[in-house]
Length: 75
Image (spheres, rainbow, N blue to C red):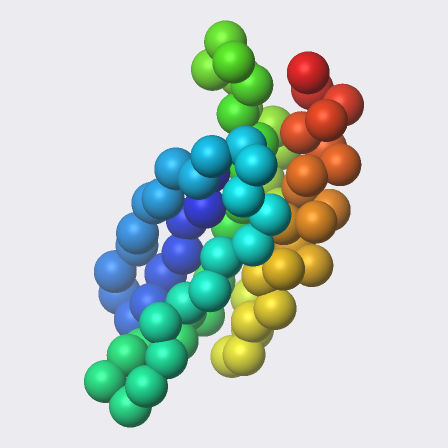
């Protein structure tokens, strides 16, 4: 599960287990997220501890790769 805040708005995305990266939209009209949280959810709905990144420019790939190893442990 990927949650991010851009400005005052939070967005939640449910990503499939095979997806190891997420690209945020770019361009002059988009607002870059300032906070991103990632959790793994197992098949019975248990959610892992939250991994949080707070940056002006984010590298979510590193957060997701750490989380993917956590998700493998939960299965």
